[in-house]
Image 1 (spheres, helix red, strand yellow):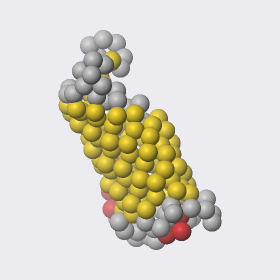
Image 2 (cartoon, one colour; image 1 turned 180 degrees about the horizontal axis):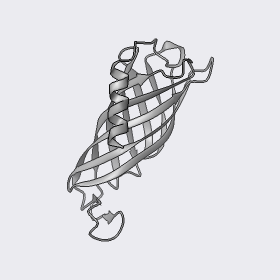
Image 3 (cartoon, helix red, strand yellow; image 1 turned 30 degrees about the vertical axis):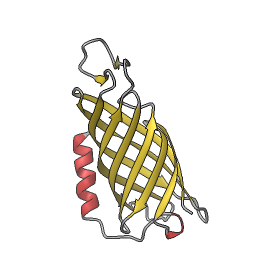
Image 4 (cartoon, helix red, strand yellow; image 1 turned 90 degrees about the vertical axis):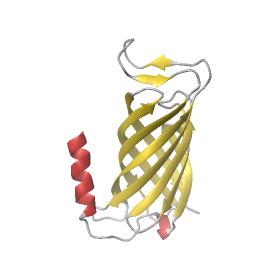
Length: 168
């Protein structure tokens, strides 16, 4: 998995710039995201190949509310304005629920999720795909990547999300 992410990152860095593939060339979109986390998402294009993505939601690695900040490199391998790939690093901040904890897998597996309402911090690497239907202000996406929890205890999880953004 690490090798795939490194290869994608290197390939994206050496890909020629393309026009922004967001709906209608608009820079700012907002919408909904499902699974990890389930909540709200916004995306702000800062250039034709780079964007900031912010997600806020529950149902998360940290067991409660989570805020993700990602910096994305967009990649256009399909030679079409309707689909593209992206990759990027990010940070994840978790806000726990007091007296709530659980573990992924067998007890003492080392996959710590959340304990007693402490704030959590993690890093992640996202790989995803955007779909932009013709003549609509919508963007659909699917993304996947590892999340490494640094505090309150070390752990590893997988983020998978589906979502949709509207570009006004």
